[in-house]
Image (cartoon, rainbow, N blue to C red; front, top):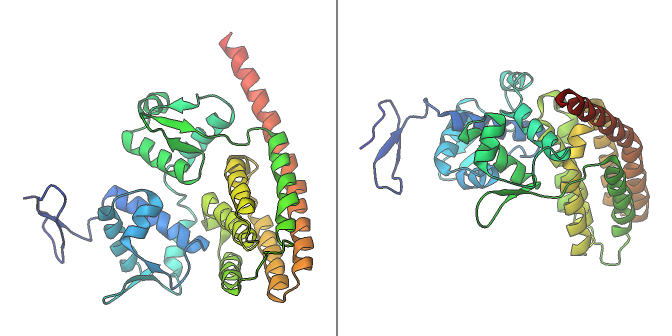
Length: 335
């Protein structure tokens, strides 16, 4: 029997049938990471106020087991971020305490720099398509736990997958500014047109949900939100609207190119001030759809995407030029 002393313990029966007692006050490192990620997702609007949160949902979301998730939920309950209702479970509080919000400004998600290093090496062809966890541990000097955390996150974002046999495989992404531009040109071709499809049907529940997310971003401190959550909210807006077309091929195509452009979006840098304008434009499109002005919403969507391309394209080309220069200098030093 494994036993940890303390008050108000949580009794669990693991698969090996050993009785384990865990104390809510003593959270593991993994549960702290889960608490931090969950808090970032709540503050960024990815998880909405009043939304029901279950241990299984969180475990599936972050690719972890339910034991540390339960500890994380208790931790967030103690911070008044979550509210536990008898026989119903946990719900996100309507308002996050200001002292909790303040801590997020100076605490980016754990492993952010390492994640960016891995992404950058894949973008610049510094690592092979097929890798093992041992390879990554040796190359970067990371622990087994860190490698697993980063691979799970990359898998969730859609640019790596576990091979059927052994190891991992990096997936195709937009690695050049030309590809980045082409993706936005493609989006300008399909997203406005999808609204004009004869099968396009307004769903006011979808529109209402997206309005809550976009307004929530406008009302939050964007500097406290991780890039991952901000990009996810933007992609979700466009994917939910194109889904209304009733044509699954539009949605499949958009989801694929959104995954392919994500790493270049990181490198093009997320401008928090520009995000306010982006959210405002999203809300304009939603207002047009809510009024039934679908043709006007289609036109506004094309303007929105065109503006994004004009703004981001120079940043992508600048990053590519800087990166090419760095690689050349590295090759000179090796000679």
